[in-house]
Amino acid sequence: MQTNLGDPPMALANLDAIIEAAEAEAGHGCGGSDVLYEARVQSAYAAILEKAQATERAATETALRKRGYDPDFVPYEAGEGECSLTGIDENCCPCGRHE
Ligand SMILES: [Zn+2]
Image (tube, rainbow, N blue to C red; front, top):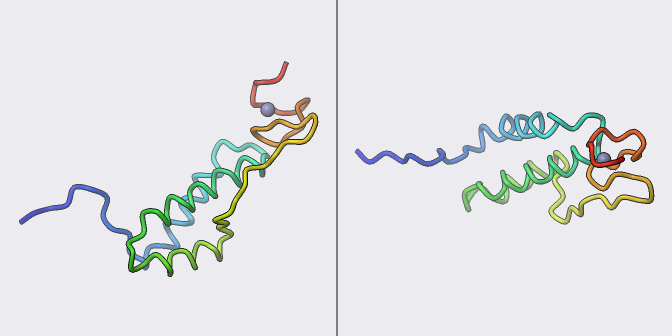
């Protein structure tokens, strides 16, 4: 019997768990930065949608949108004195790129 060694196809039944795991994963390493979290979680949502089978794509997108998925997500643009990576004030940002 032929076995598929790739990722098993995602089942919609597991979608909530998959999304929650992706959100938890995106939260790691963000410190207090909503900007960084948002960029990471949007990227994770897009990856989940990409992996969805064609027949489950619409339902997957609906579920993701309920969680805040934004297909037109634009990364945060930092204002003056804000870190472009985290959105945190450069004087407080822990990313290590500021003098
Ligand atoms: Zn920074």
